Amino acid sequence: MDLTIIIPLLNEAESLPELHNWIHKALKPEGLSFEILFIDDGSTDDSWQVISSLCQANPSTKGIRFLRNFGKSQALHAGFAAAKGEVVFTMDADLQDSPDELPAMYHRLKEEELDILSGWKKKRYDSILFKNIPSKLFNWSARKSSGIYLHDFNCGLKAYRKEVVKSIEVYGEMHRYIPVIAAQEGFKAITEQVVQHQARKYGETKFGLSRFINGFLDLITLSFLHKFGKRPMHFFGLWGTIMFLIGLIFAGYLGIDKLYFNTDGRLIAERPEFYIALATMILGSQFFVAGFLGEILVGQQKNIKRYTIIEHTEEKNDN
Image 1 (cartoon, rainbow, N blue to C red):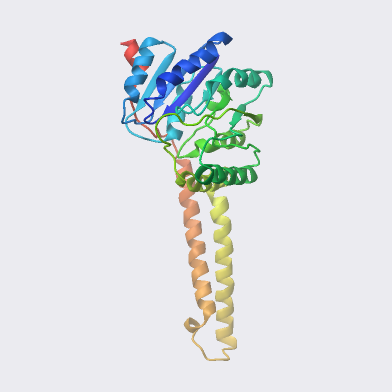
Image 2: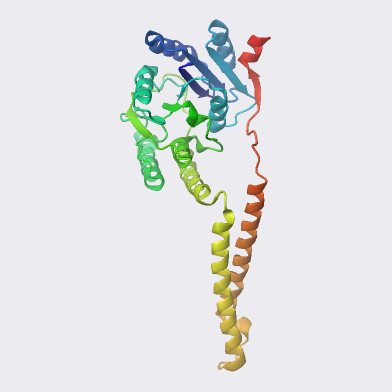
């Protein structure tokens, strides 16, 4: 199969038929074999009923339904696991990503032998104050910290080689940083392409300003895990040693001063150096304990499924 289009969604029943028809209209003239995979992330409207009817009408359309809302990262993880196409696309279900971009992105990915081709919504139809400006700040910090120079990390429209999505694990809210995760796994052929951005036609956005704050925190987490995720003791042990040595030096100074000098007659507990020594030695010990616990957790880490699928359209078809 040439393409898989993965579409995570939450309460987008109104837009799904139009999006489905638009994808077929864009891809059928190209003569490409493709599948559309809708991931219903716990919708409470009629989204799953719409998906089921689309699947019955077209065998190339499939759906996965979560038991509850687990998040976009988990939806993409499930989609990546089920994808069969040689090139895997992700796009949003709100009609703000244009399916007309799919053929050009597919051919460029294949011709230039890219690992990831990310969309860049150069001209946006979003609120300047609540989306555009925070998005620019977020993307700037992501570029500087990751070394991957994409203008729009948050763009839902991306194309991947199949090997990329089968080699990475997306969890938490790390869907914003799939190019970063892929680069850390060794996939370096990553670039971007300007894509058309549409104004939202139905419903309301599911994301607020909190996603940018969470995005910054996730970026720090991702950077830490990349450097120390497999060897947490390298981080905690280093700082634990430094803190403990500082405390030991102050404690030694206090002891020598008390035994041989003691010029002011003060008790050790009355001197500020005592509390510096006490605090740093305790912190150093705690860092060491955290490092040991981290090593134990890494050693016992297993593949844990972070979402629950309640329904799958392929299972219905098989029955």
